[in-house]
Image (cartoon, rainbow, N blue to C red; front, side, top):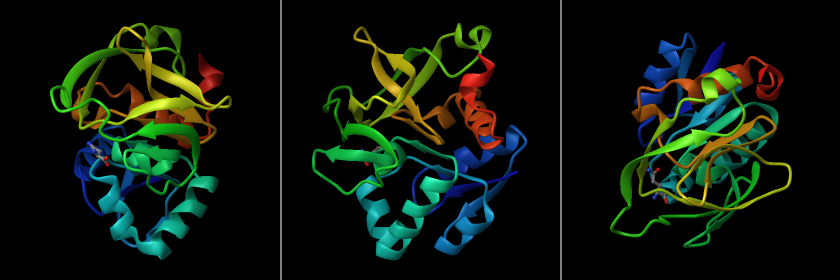
Length: 201
Ligand code: GLN
């Protein structure tokens, strides 16, 4: 199975290493046409506005088609790119997952932190019991979750949704590639293998 990692900017290399560790063949995607040869795509963290600039109109349109056909996992800036609505400031999204997301939502004081959250679905019960370390870096906040969106993981006293899935698209507001825990990437690879994550709970 060949998984692409969008490698225009940001921390794509940590995703590459993690996916390879889990047995995937990884292609660093720098040109739109490379999307034709991969079975799934990770959009890493970085700066979502910069991603949009670097993608250009052609890249954006190609990516928009891709995310409707093949499994895609966006982390942090990647989650912002996949969202239906983006605030602070308003920005174009791919509309691949029905969430509303606010950029840089945690303010200056705690804009980057390591916190502990929990899985609420999308994994078998045994795996889901263990807490999940979450690295947030100038993280966005998911402010609206559409009816068809499954919340995979939450964080904080209000159980804020921080990892979500709709169909073949997963998004996380933190950086799972920066923790040792491999469960979220594994869940994505399972999705790519066409094992619906809901099937093996
Ligand atoms: N603050 C960035 C943005 O708005 C996201 C930060 C990240 O990806 N770590 O795009």
